[in-house]
Image (tube, rainbow, N blue to C red):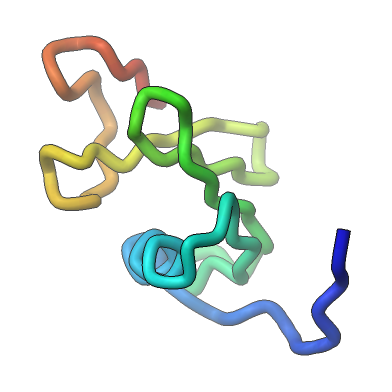
Length: 83
């Protein structure tokens, strides 16, 4: 594990997904600009993104068929449960 001395970037979820993809990282910890809370964004095995939020450890998904847009219901034919 490496620790980055730089502060976590302040991003919206869609920006975090784009940055994670551009950098080729397995996950990205960022400060969610919409909530002012830290959240890790990671790539799931099914190709979607997972987002852990501190409020209740909710897992949200970013649907690749929706060009990375946060979805609040099942997408991709119901194969990706989201909260």
